[in-house]
Length: 406
Image 1 (cartoon, helix red, strand yellow):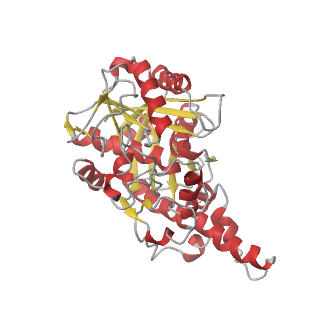
Image 2 (cartoon, rainbow, N blue to C red):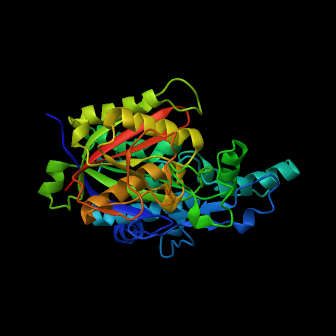
């Protein structure tokens, strides 16, 4: 018998809000977390000026010894995790039956630049901070959260670009189902940095035509889209065995029914509709559901030219035009390693509050995209019972999650 997995806590910090109530309101309005990044202007050959930002964050009152090895990305992760653990009422995260899975695309890029600039300028390590590496190492979120909470169960770092957060949740599901843990703290985080924008800029994948109109980009699936907008944020969910959660009276916020992940095995940057569709089918198979059982799909859709086309074809192959689809990237930008976890939280808000968020900035669907039931304009009032959220990363790594309303 398959072990049922509940979500008992959620925490998030995003450019459009830092609670389910806040993001729910933002998704039903015309909110935009994208801002002009004036500080990027002095970087030569950096064409984009747009980024999604969460603003100032504070860890005042926390143990300074525990947070000194945290860069911004790990600090965002901590803020989200504190809220998730508090809501779940998880009193002892150090219980050996409690584990953690967390990911990000990068460690703290600001910490890396602060470390590398003087090193390369002087060819000397003299005076460089001893905590720098702990801030920019790839598994900084998982390691720092584990240390902060005294985690003694399994700790998994899922650093796989845009599927980091969703693979972390998938790893948590599998650990609980296999009997290796009773609860898993899972999520993803990313900090905004000009190097992230630059990486995509040199690949000609960033939005540049809307530099003076930040709220109009990105534009997933739109005929006038011109690329992605890098962003930041974090989200954490607490996963538990359903029977354990019910026995201790924990809040049951949603149930995770299915998880699928695979690889295209074809190209590092060119996605495959066949690979995406296969991941979606794996998730449906894991959930023991047909495509007709899905009430809504949260698309990855980052507003790149090729990515949106290929994803639309994958979804059409599985669902046809029968399932409502939207992407949250128009509100937030692309939060990279955080997006999979954040989008799980956004789906939870939609299921709880009875609406489907539209794809912000989608005014005219690209005719090259396969036909889908796009949610356009205002939020669509309905109460979805079973939803799917998909993410796709460089390397052809694909994920799909299916959840059910509590």
